[in-house]
Image 1 (cartoon, rainbow, N blue to C red):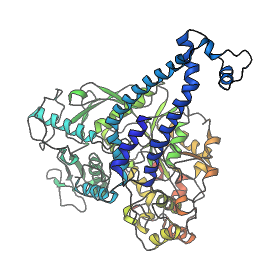
Image 2: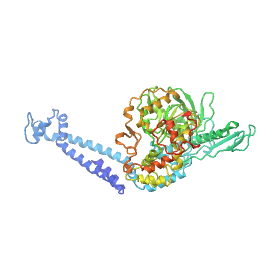
Image 3: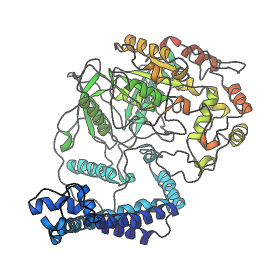
Image 4: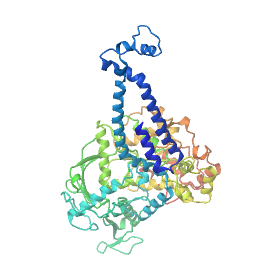
Length: 634
């Protein structure tokens, strides 16, 4: 009673402007809960305490409850013994005295808890206050953050707790790294690990650590041309021509992704120059790798400038496993991890959560990072990200089980294909009818680009009663070509999926393209495709799935039940009908408009084998910049 009352009072006083629903909860918790406690104590004084404590204290058998109740009413029951004959009344209150002692100890503990936790509870309630000011601060932080950081890293990282401990630990690691070498933080990173502990340097500057204070290694991408190449000055084998390529990362990309941009630029120019010229690449920056040493190891530059060493190791059949070492003292011990053999690399709102659920239900498959479906790099360092895979490896004791990951960012997968020097893995990519895909994203996420307010929740999900959604509003945005945020536009729809497919397969790596419609329409065929490609490309033999019949009626992470672990039945979810838009379907004219722009429709129908796609474009699959010419790689 004391704990509940004081706790509620401590919350209500400094939060008089909190929403009424939260204040109502505190009034109930601080008022009714103590009242129930007091009633329980009073009733226990006459019945419960007496029945429980009289026998141990008096050294006799407890009085039967029926007899005790009958005696209290002045009626003798069968075999009832008078309470005053064997149990003096003053003795019956010993149990109450013990209860009061217990209550006193509990109250002291409650005060102890309240002292340390009430401030955090106050902060939770204050989350609802000043959302506009907080949103402006986050926009200003995203604008001022260097290219090393993501534009919205915290919004996509479920493990981020908002405490700033991660940035502080990263800053301390950076300070120790450069202090141990006695050089400025902006100097170039060493080419090989120093293999010595970091010395204790001077304390950091006053004030809280900031992500923008983390020094970055130099960033440079240089291409050298030897031989004639269209679009470049004349050069030869004896007189090469070198040019520095500007690296402009799109929003959401950070650190190690610059290595991927430089690599893709190198591949593009080599294909453009043809066999008549040789194009070489020199990249310096996060994610840069050295040549492989005689012992099979190589170095990788981390996002904080430190150097890591990777070496292949045999730990689990079929997988590409590695030994990882860093430069700091805590990183000197080798860490062993295995890269996932199966990777879901796309696409959002295309059934990736359902596919992840499908893989996890097979007895031979296990998640590589059990805590999180979409385990991606985000704000982590390369060391922390790769170190995370060891948890899945050690959690699964059966070495015959195969690890899979659900990071749906194909850029993440392509980047670590470079860092790990093409590990063995099978990438799974999901596609969906473009109109249903756009309508689903519109109802699922919120964005300030289309006038949504209060998008401060960690996942940027729409909230019923807070955000506005309707078929008419969606049609107006599409028809006038708003193209804001994640909305489809005429240009983006033309080759939305095949553009990514061509980028993923540019190095000739196999990609398994699946139709999300098969998860409901033909799940047996979808599993056959996965099992066939797994056996052909990574040597994995998958038996028949034991739960396909049950899973074909399962919907995961739907608009009305969000979250990668939110499972619903297909009977409770109507296709294309969402609560936030009043369960109204997308307008038919909107669907026809989007399908008329979808030039890759025929191409995707051939790649996936799903004949349910309705193609409207007059010249499907003919755009040179988006069509996949060589389908043998798929």
